[in-house]
Amino acid sequence: MITSGHNESRLSSHLGRGVLALLLVALVAGGAYQLGRQQASGERGARRVVALQKQLAQQKSQLRELRARLEAELDALALRLGNLRAHMLRLDAVGERLVKKGKLDEKEFDFRHEPPLGGAGEGAAKGATALDISNELERLGRDLQDREHKLELLEELLMQRELNQQVRISGRPVKRGWISSVYGYRTDPFTGKKRFHRGIDFAAEAGSEVLAVAAGVVVFSGREQGYGNVVEIRHAGGYITHYAHNRENLVKVGDRVEKGETIAILGSTGRSSGPHVHFEVRRDGKIINPARFIGRG
Image 1 (cartoon, rainbow, N blue to C red):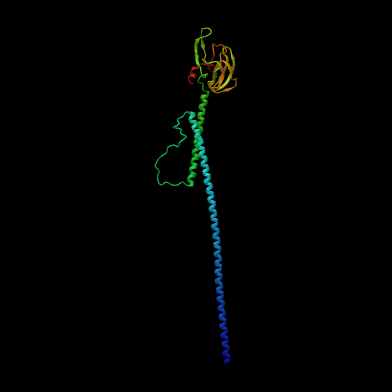
Image 2 (cartoon, rainbow, N blue to C red):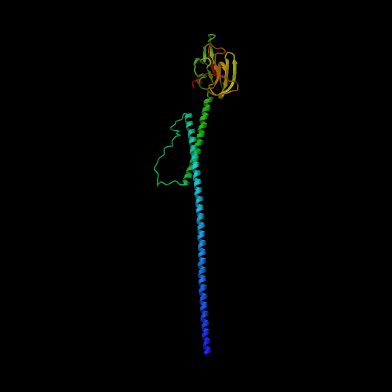
């Protein structure tokens, strides 16, 4: 009986130690599990922090790129605005030149000041945005194109008017002088008889300049019986002007002459009683009284 109780006591002791061991193992395992979870959680947190840092760095880089791009766009807008203003100044200069050249009303065609504007606005004033500036630049660009086109048309019209004035027969063939004989019947200074005078004589100092009264092409330059040295110029509309008694002709056949250009030196060659230029106008072979053209000048 003693042996049996002793054995039971030993068994109980072994069982208790086994249970205690199992509890210890369980406790250790549980602690290890918790520690592993904490470590895993810490690693995930660290990785998350790293990821957030990378994302923040990327966003900062994107912000820098965006700022640089915006600054570049603003610089481009400023450059374009400067170019447009410079272009406007050039157009203003052209406009002022055309106004003076065409003798137009400077108040009506004012290129120095902005046109007066007015009117009450509605709502609160808003600050300009990049889109507003871009739209304004586009509008200014269209206005400049329209203005440039109109100025080109104006210049073309003025040039055409100047061309018409160039080819239009007007004025006198001398800078300084006086009419010594008119168109029509007169007493011939050599015979004393009535004779038809086909032009107008302009007396002036010998050696002075004989001028073309309109732009044209020289069709004759040489001597002609009774007229001495002669220059003839063909003009638009079938007109021909005739300059006679020259001391010297300064142009030759085929030369293109401008209005007011010197074509000869005044003299008294041919059938002449003194230094003067005999001036005739013909159209399609018919003699025309030059007085109507002299009066235009």
